Image (cartoon, rainbow, N blue to C red):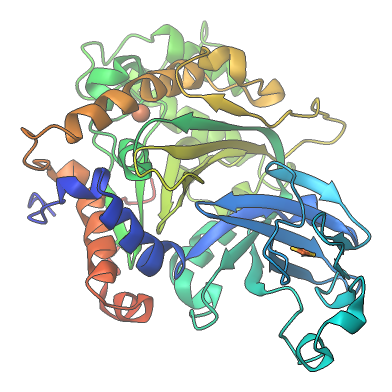
Length: 445
Ligand code: FES
Ligand SMILES: [Fe+2]
């Protein structure tokens, strides 16, 4: 694929309230999204409050052990039941703070003060006064949800990306850190910034010492992935032979002494792969399921429309994008969630989830990643975080006629095209039936 994409992204999609309203109707309320980790709703009565735009959603472990989703809305006069901010909590029942209606963990209405003053036919009509549910399924250690009762199953929705993620055994991982950034930009502005590597050579030029920026891209139906090879200098990096400090760190981290390493800079990646392959079967990490490339490289998956996973065998970063509760299309929540598989005896300090106003605190002060601190990731993320609102401001200008995209940005075209198709009235099922599943663009080595 050498052809630059032809699809034109509508600039209004980044700021128009009408567009955001259409997105809510045709995209957010129809697609599957990533909710909390399974272990955050492990025991009966565990509840996780999660907001998505205008909705506050409750993920609950019921008495029967099932994970269920309830809208955080009382059936009487719509008060929120739990007033908690996003995060975990525990309840025996749901008790509405306004007039005292109660619901059990299965969402059934169990108590109404002065019940005799209501029409009993209405209160006892099946489904009329019980909590409204939404669909929840579990995959890769996460609870996924859709607000559409007619949506395809999660596995149908994920299609070929499901088995690819399975190989990483993501359910073994645990959250090491989770922070939510509030940005003054459209959610897609941030999504786009994490959906291409073309910006590495300018915004993250330090990566070129140890990784590539021309990541091969594979479209997997409505989803996609790109592969960032790590452990070799980019072709744009002037020194291809002598080791640089980043490559030396990478060798050391994999038990190889850089002082005695006789290979070139371009040989580090293969050495890292061999070192991990040698530990296969003796480690908690799923090396045996992974190709050589997956041992060293970042596999960056886009799950349409609101999640990225940047996967390494030992840890991964989940990026989640959410429209802002205010409904303002020029605000968003960006969840940065670091997960790692812990080795025996390894512990991590508990993380504190909070909402951080984007750009107000240095990222390295915000994220405490304990055992899985990755070289340059703090700096790199800070560079992205500091720029997104400036991109938003430019996109809002009357002078902006729409992006001119390279082949390295074709995931952006693919992503926006599918959103535009939904808004034009096509269904998720239509998209699943018509999007391409490309052969892997990366050889696996
Ligand atoms: S709004 Fe919940 S009891 Fe009235
Ligand atoms: Fe970036």
